[in-house]
Every structure is written in C-alpha cells, then in structure tokens.
Length: 116
Image (tube, rainbow, N blue to C red; front, side, top):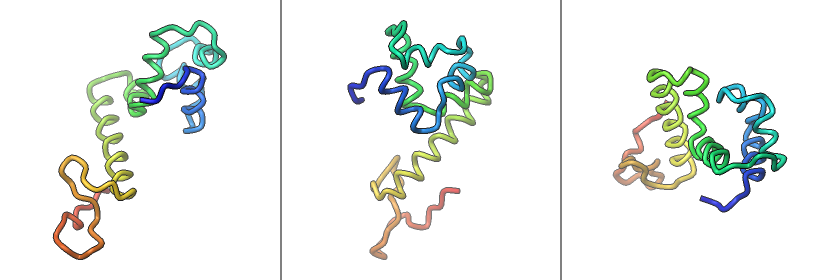
C-alpha cells in the first residue's frame, strides 16, 4: 500500500468519482466528516483505517449502501471481484486466480473463458 496521507487518499477517491458527502451518507457518518478529514481536521487512526479500506475495497460502499446485510455484502463483493478480474485480464496481467488471460498466440489457454 502506498504511503499517502489521509487527504491524499480522499483526493484519490474523489478522482475515482466518490464525493466526500456520498461517503458520509453511505457509511452513516455525520455529513462533513470526510471533507473535514480531507482538510486535515480530526484525522484519527480509525479515519485512516476506514478510508484505506474503502480505497482498497471500494465494493464495501455498495455493501454499506445495502445496509451491510449479508446479501448486499455478497453481491457487492462478487461484483467488485468481477470488475477486478475483467480489468486484470484486459490489462494482460496474465493469470489471476488460476484463469489465464486471453491467448493471442493461438496456443492452448482459457481464451474461451468469458466474463460478462
């Protein structure tokens, strides 16, 4: 994990489309909490841990938005995993969880595996 400050992590989430007020609402925090952290106000180890988890596992926001029910968490996690697998295979990173990326050489691989 990169050694970024909390404001830098929040800015990176903002660049990915996550607005501080949306993070507050989804995570059930007082509106303005995330923006305060971005401004360097009341930065705690818990705040750093929470934002680091959201940055590492963005699907957790979908689980939170679904009330953290088991069903919402499973759907969010599997949806997030599918996105990661697609991106990894599209970027030609090769093998991920035992699935070989598309084979352009025509020699044996799992190039027939399709992720929808």
